[in-house]
Length: 437
Image (cartoon, rainbow, N blue to C red):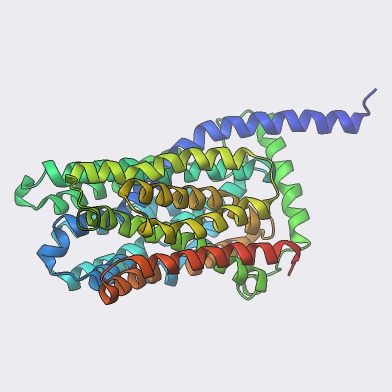
């Protein structure tokens, strides 16, 4: 016969599972939509570049790399303060504010007169978006217990391959068929059309996002209380090993090491995201093939469609958190430099697809590592720092890849750097498996 305490625990487990399912159905689709728009506005410059923008504004590969990557300098400067503001004022208000400001800047890019203004607007876009992604990662810790968090993070992050796959097709269709609309070039119309949804979604967020389970009127009271008890117990357990203050979190060796892991994995993501359209366009010279703008968009989507499936399947496997990150980072790091040494474009795309699958499989599992170690304001600061330092790769990857492309006349050396960064991320993850500092 079950004791009274065992009955309460069993009842709480059932209520927590029910509450998680209900919260997942309510919150995750909205968060996926927000991240879809966020990621699309961040990387759509990759489609503008080789489809009229570089020529119209007179951008070299290096200058394009600067314009693509300067976004992350503004992003770096405000990530930690923004996450602390979200922790203080609540996700609903702060995420809505972020959406409005980034939507305005993203739309303004349609009217860029020259390369200097483009670089300034990309920097301001980073400032405007700062705090969105780490804020959502922090927000998920307010709602989902550790056992379910990696799965919910994976569903949230499906927006990356979805936005890259659908975004590639959408962006190239706009560039191709909306050229001349409002008297603007196709790439300008793309920035205009893809920037407006962020402003609209700010109002949706204000009315639909709920800060914490305790204030969710749409959850049954028993589920609200069970979720709050479970989350409070986990916070108390994590607090025993977590840095005690914001400053402790910012100077924690483990947080800094995790920043490098994230840098290495995301380096692969952004190198592919910003230069894959250019690489595909270059198949014409390298392999003697010819693809239309829309065909290039469809080909660009393939690695991310396959990667979406890989992300979900890999996250569902009950493997050690270290293995969940280190193995795909290692596989991706070994696969990507091979891509441009293969004898035809189809084999090259297989190697690129393996890399995309690896990056996307590693990302959701990665965020289970810092959220298992950090809590409270220290979590807000630590997650913000990891994301900001890691996303420096968003500046370094396109800049270095572009610089090496200009210097050597091809993308081979740049992709070797991508592979090296990803392999080093796998190595550091493995080293951290025994570290608790």
